Amino acid sequence: MSQSVGATASAQAFEVLGAVMAKKQQNQEAQMATLLVESAMQTSAAVQSPSPVGNLGMNINIKV
Image 1 (cartoon, rainbow, N blue to C red):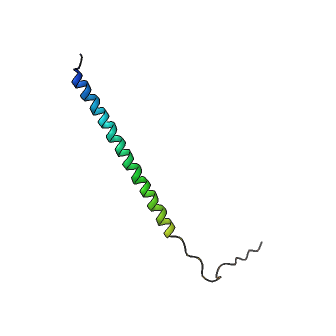
Image 2: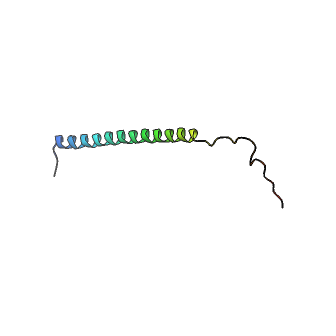
Image 3: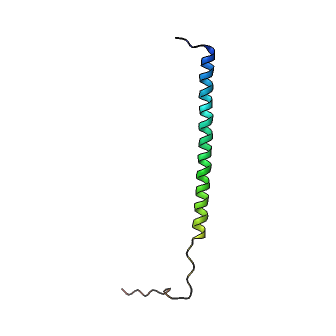
């Protein structure tokens, strides 16, 4: 069974369209992942523990 030239060209065009759409989706997913990582880094930088006030608990006596 042979397909006509038009049907073959149409099938190839749909394959190319599918590949282009898949590539665009991968790029969007990569961009979203990058934004997620960047926002997580900003959040962790903002939630750092405060430095201790005074010297309470700074000295630890160890006896062996």
